[in-house]
Image (tube, rainbow, N blue to C red):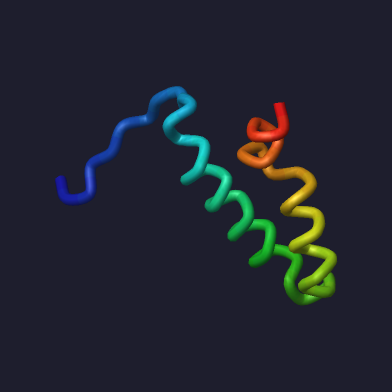
Length: 55
C-alpha cells in the first residue's frame, strides 16, 4: 500500500513540525475573514513552540 503511515503520540521532536502545521491550518481557515497582521500576532502569541521557548 503506497503512502503507509503510523499513528502515534507526538513527542518534543515533533513540536516544530506540528507548530508549523497548526499555523498553516489557522491561516487557511481564517485568511478570508481576518487581517494577516492579526493572524500572525495570534500565531506568535499562541504557538506551542513559542510557549515552550518562553519557559
